[in-house]
Length: 380
Ligand SMILES: Cc1ncc(C[n+]2csc(CCOP(=O)(O)OP(=O)(O)O)c2C)c(N)n1
Ligand SMILES: [Mg+2]
Image (cartoon, rainbow, N blue to C red; front, side, top):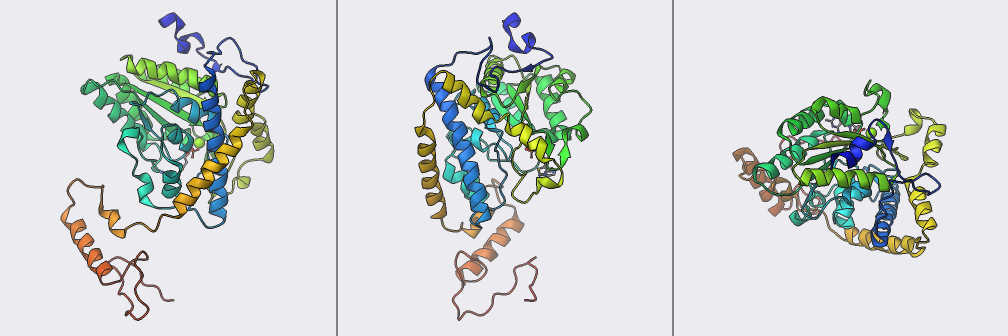
């Protein structure tokens, strides 16, 4: 197997398959048509979901949102490499990967609307909820993979994080532990060149992020992250090795965040229009579209079908009422500690009396509710 092992064959180079004009090189895996069309559909779905979320946010119908535009190839290519029983451990910017895993669009919109039930994912999807603390999910992924090994279960774990996360201790601890214990985990770095306003060159003095694998004694490969076939090929091999008991892998996907970091960010303050335009010319969707066009597989109906699916998801998510305020006490502890039990009882009593929650507004005649413990009083 080793002399065919992609990570050995293309060592030291950025692995790619499809050029921007859609022509493929000798590494084209010749995937079946239905898989190619599935890849394309998920990429279009990711892009369109994103555009809709940004518009909803501007209209005040969505909370702060982190766009994925430009990063669809990494997300779709890596998630499609997973078997249904493999686990996906995403950051906050992996919405297209989560869609591939089967997380409903409505659920993800809910999460970004601040409704915590959007983070309650059905366990059979084998997908953890999105993670906000940068890089912390790498440790969860290693832990999950260690559990697979100690319980002799066959699943692999694939974890995404950004270039900025590689500067955190969590990244090093997760890779070190994974290397020592040879656990079935694939780390996929979405190197989108920026960690909010911090550029990659201020993040690391290494030539690549992939080479950091060397320090942990695990295989590492740099991949063109705007080439969905290359990402899929690399991740399929890495997931296969994990499942076969051959240990962890680090894959750096070189890509670019075309949009804002989140809808609270203004990237014109820290990066040039020329830089963004240069990456727009490497758009992963245009590239894969050109590849499919050459194979005469491009289907004009995809966009309309995706738009209808998104419109339906928005309708369903906007029909969901405000969450039950008592829900905030659930799911954090198996057994609630006494101080939270007391706070829960206090809130439940206030809700019963019609005070203290937007979901059950107090009648106009009710006296003003006294401030909750720890709540600041408004002078207005
Ligand atoms: C532990 C922690 N520190 C700081 C932040 C604030 N923060 C949110 S995103 C971000 C940048 C992360 O950059 P990167 O890892 O490259 O991911 P990207 O946002 O580019 O996908 C920072 C510093 C956070 N969420 N968590
Ligand atoms: Mg980044």
